[in-house]
Length: 423
Image (cartoon, rainbow, N blue to C red; front, side, top):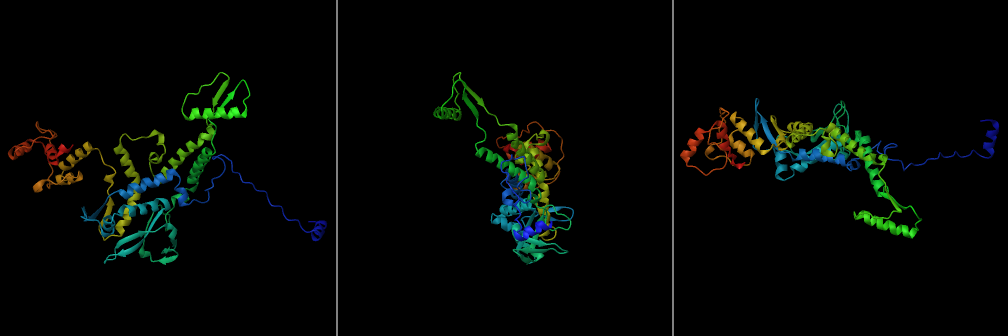
């Protein structure tokens, strides 16, 4: 600054700096510019994206509705327990076990953590009641021994149960999938919003209808347009003279591109949660499909296994030593009736199950007088004697029934005992 400018500033005063002009760009297509969610994504907004909600619903519904079975580890074998531990038995008795599991699984897949507070314990100090907490109420201060906060107050670590998703070294809390993939989810939300705004604004007119011979007055144009719209909406044939020209307008490729973007978003969300994209509205990779529903169910269980394992390990740490609970994945993978009975027959031949256990799988009562309690393996001949048809038949006298049973191969005797006439 020279001396002249300095004197002018003293006399006149320094002019105020001109504000930089800023304009908001609000009419760009969805595939231009950055996402409005690039730097933040809240849970409620993310759940409005259909593939995200579908993925969370798929995982929580499957996991929370699987039956829980309790076992005791007796060294070389596991022994089924007649009842669930009190923590789970009380919830099941009150009809709240599914909702309780749903809260835990949903918190894990949405926020990356399931955090609960132990409300009550038994005489040995084991939890008998756990309440899951919203992550908005929970905080943690990292350190050699993490300090937990609930509603801003310090809570004893012994009163907190924590099941993290993906956990990095030195971090107590697991990664939040919605937070770390906010750009992907935001792009999907932008796409859906663009489509909604496009249709709300009327989109593109369905076509152009013009007279090639004369000029139409505004009143006549309104009447013709009304009749044309009524014909299109009524799916009626459109009849017009030789001096009229109708030209339908198709959606340009750049405007229809958001449909492909929606499919891509569903595939990315499926990859994030380890699911088959078809389950949440995406497309299978390279046209991969399953030959039958049983194989698809097995794939569902395989995708769900990492989530189930995390909960099973955590639940075991809350129970007395050697006790644990497992989700019964067979409830997902339930074969067709013919396949099930073939498996039952083989299991009985090698003594894996007795007949009463197999009948219980099919909700049938045990055989009278302990006939179905034997585990002795049966020698298979691979043949079935004549007269061993498994179809229903009239009741035979006891001596004839015993003679008939003696003539049957082991496979036929198993089938006869199981009551395969139910097929």
